[in-house]
Image (cartoon, rainbow, N blue to C red; front, side):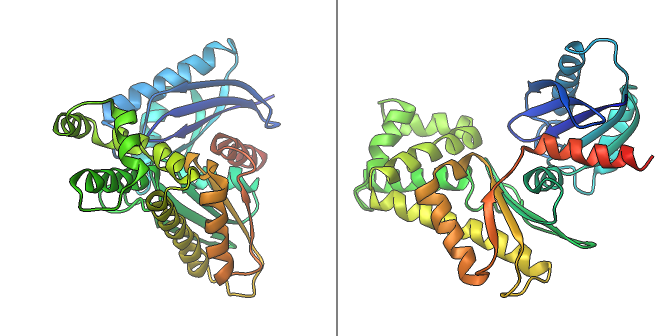
Length: 302
């Protein structure tokens, strides 16, 4: 029996799983963020080590044959991450890729196609034959359209416009106070700027709540987000050479897609206007399972 250690490293958390070469998961652990670009390098490394050590403690005495790591921010820096994981002397071999790649493999259980991811950030990634295509994923300053950060930011802007009297009245202002607490708006703004990304992303769920209550401003923001996410999938499909009449698979994942009626349904409709025969569904498995599938395939070739 051979064993694999799989890592899904993202900007919010790191998940580590240990699996047999059959794919059966025997240990899981979670730790803090490990985005290889946006998380301070020392913190990313410490969080990975914490997750790895926690997973290994659950199954004492086994030897790891292969580490398979899919980590956000690792594109074009795979060698750095590989060197770090090799330096831990845990496994005989280390294989490194991106978080989008393992998310795609997990979402489609190894089939080719496309995934659209909408969490704190947003990105689309696809594979067809020997081609691959990434769309988006440029971070919260230059992209991440349709993500929790994007929706939270738009929601806060709408709330502040309503506060000023230069925008439509909206439930988002009440939600703004509920989220941050009652108080002087200028004082609340200072709190936001201290931890901008986390606080703004967290407001997305209040935008969804407002939309579910029928608030027109919130619904407009959510519809825009759905459209932006659909563009990620459409651009990836076009980049892979799919034509209007083609049939292919497209999966979606991420916390933002939990709002089905007001996020997923428009997202699906926008894509089907361009590709009527595409099969669109939630991810079949989480990214760490994708890392295990890749590891299993690799061990099978040895």
